[in-house]
Image (tube, rainbow, N blue to C red; front, side, top):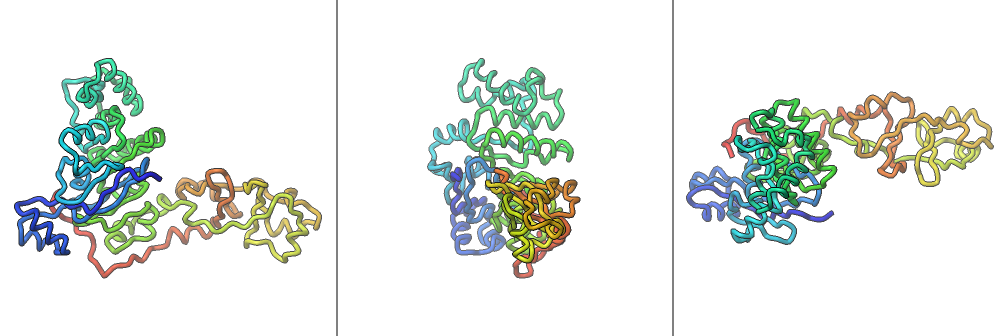
Length: 407
């Protein structure tokens, strides 16, 4: 994968003595002690990570963790105190005002929590706002705005005004406004947090659908773990201005780096997070030109419940049970005695999405994107994975603080 964004040793400090606070932060002094000594707040503290092209990278944390400050350093709505933000090979932190304006207009779009629509302008005019600033003609602006509105399902409302739209629709206009400029990166700062739960989930689904088509790189800020797990390709957990863990949703839930992360994830429905790739076993299989006698000579069929029969490409075509094998004569082809009505799931499919198909006495076939047999799952043993409670490493750290200063 191509590295789209690289953040290196980023600090953002607010207050009267940022340089002294920076020196103390680099020495490892606690942020509360830094505040006592300097009156300055270390909002982002030595943060480093990279974002791959085309992924949704979610930054999650409690209020006051520094996540919104961090994303505003990407396009320098907040000037970083120290460190760098690279957009491919372009250092945003060293850009001139003119270069920075081009980055904001052409390369980085931003969607905020509050819609910030202009009430006296139509939906299409709001969606085209960034294009007008860029200097496109009225006809070009209209065309691109309508394309963006069609992407979010609002092209029919192009000539309406924001007052006629619901909250979810207004937020979709904000999303269309960011999409209209065709940015390489979209920065989304808690864009759905002001919406009611039903509309919020619809917006999440729409974002995933749009992302599957346009493959934009998205950095998404949220305080909601469910939202992070649903949207994120990778998730960064922030605490007190620092990142304490970066991982896939499955890694965050199953392998929390410390107790702070484990406390976040302890009530997560694992079936909605874990994929079959996480829980599958190494597959045992036989080719479709095998005869029963070839397997009987082994004394037992590999796999306690049976074995899958695969074609020349390694794709499952049937399931062979121990009982069927024991009843067959030696020269019987396995294709004559296999069960061809078997359950098949994708390796990247979430467990929850396949529960209604797991009522089977046979092993479930787990296949990759090309349909090759990648593993098997015993449906009866599956629930032990869901009951598993990860024991996170740590030093007895307390529960995440419920109150923190606002970002």
